[in-house]
Structure formats: structure tokens, C-alpha cells
Image 1 (cartoon, helix red, strand yellow):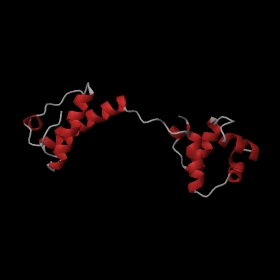
Image 2 (cartoon, one colour):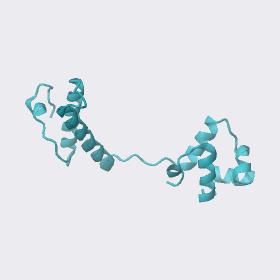
Image 3 (cartoon, helix red, strand yellow):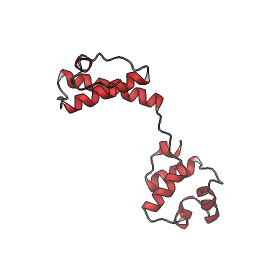
Image 4 (cartoon, one colour):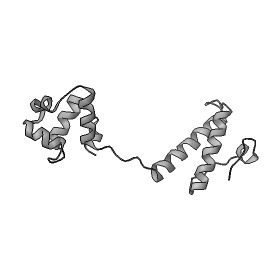
Length: 130
């Protein structure tokens, strides 16, 4: 069900926990309408909009979770960004063969190695430990 911006339902929207996809879509449309009206964040309507955004985030976190990135793929990406080769990691974590096995997924990412990669490449620990 599409609502037009001038629809009375938008004007008197009552906020509630989102339980269905229809509730979610309706609230998204209401939020879109509020943005179009350039509601001031500090106004009563602005506060209501902020609450609506929190409700939407809660629903999306539960129904549309974002998968955690693969830690090894993040390591490879950071290596590429920094112009590093496998051999550059040898002094940090072990032999060339071990580095190769780690980056190919044949060896596990240990806590010690995760700590080193966090320190050297700046990868958040929660990504490496996911």
C-alpha cells in the first residue's frame, strides 16, 4: 500500500515496534516523507524521526543482518592497499610457507597472529576474531 506525502496517516504516525514487513515499509515511507519536509532534528517531530530511525535499525539488524567479513580476505585487502606481498608478512608471523598456507586458508588464524595483524595492518580485532 503506497501512501502519498499528504496522506493523513503520515501526519499522525504513531510509533510502535515494527513487527511485519508492511510495518517496516510504512515507517520507511514516513521517514522519507519527514526528510522531504526538512524536519529540524531538535524539534518534537525531529525527535520522533530519530526514534523511528532507531526502530528501523532494530528491525533491519534482526531481519537483514550484514554478514561478518572473512578475516583472511580483509588481510589480503589491507596487504593490497599497503602494497605488501606475502614475503612482507614473513618477519611478522612466520615462514613464507606458513604465510602462504594462512592466506590460502590451509592454516588457522591464531590469536597471536590476529594480534600482530591488528597492530601492523590496523585491522579491527573484532574483524579478525569473527
